Amino acid sequence: MWENMTYEAILADALSRVPSDVDKRQGSVIYDALAPACLKIAEYYAQLDNFVDLVSGDTAVGEYLDRVVADYGITRKPATATVRKVMTTGPVDIGSRWAINDVVFKITALLSTGVYSATCETAGSIGNTYSGTLSNIDNTSDVAATLGDILTAGTDEETDDNLRSRFYEQVRSPSTSGNIADYKQWALSVPGVGGAKVFPLWNGNGTVKVLVVNSDMAIDETLPNKVAGYIEAVRPIGATVTVASPGGVEIGVTADVILDGSQTLNDVQTAFTKSVAQYFKESVFVNYSISYAKIGAQLLATPGVKDYTNLLVNGGTSNIAIGDTELPMIGAIALTEVSP
Image (cartoon, rainbow, N blue to C red; front, side, top):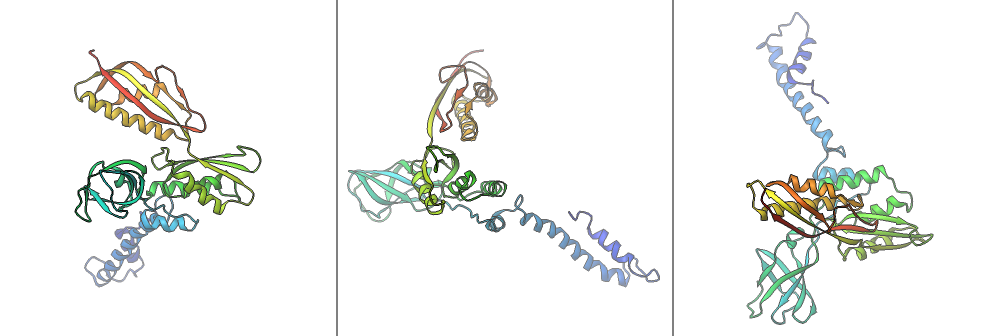
């Protein structure tokens, strides 16, 4: 914005305002007096460029973005803690603490004999990462414990990109006392929610249905109650709101692949599975047809794949339709190496 306000340009302008009968050559008294001030002014102009970036919604980051969106009633969603199953060989105390790889879980409830729920003491996705044997860090015990399934996935603090997207959505689709944009924004403001879809009048006048997914754009059965509780507190009087998770459509892929020798089959299958999972994630509430051709293109673009044959998606060669209340889920991915 102030690209032309360089030190040289500012100094030249300052010197041009000095009477011509005054010595303005480098090393003169007036030159040496003006030069440091002009250098400082040039630095201020450089900082102004950065300042404008920090107070604009499209370029602000961190706490500056927080301040921009706060003017519109939006706050960054905090990290949430993981809740996991813990299986033990005997009874353990509620509140006892167990660790794996320096990640600590606190026992919160007995689910059934030898099965407990435990909450990670560190908020964020780190609690989703590990599985295996736990060590008791509070006291010596003969009881062995194993970290099991995720009951509630932990989520990291909302990223700048996600917060910016919510900000854009709110300012570009302003709320009007309970319209579709309102319900979507209310759902998305709940920590842990990564996507939402609203169905107005889904069961007659005055009814609204909201489908929600977690930050990984996957089904999380703990979210509907949280979202429903928040919406209930802010919705217009008279509306009947139902919050639920979408249904899942499992999609499996099989194919014969010809490798180029740069990757193992296992590496290829892992990379391809990640690629398909990302495609499914980006399709949630956006695309309701999973393309057979796109999956083929992703397979061909996978490092290590030279070519492929006999590609089947859910046993066929057609696109897979996804209902408007459903989302695609990764099924079995099976690649078989064949000779050229």
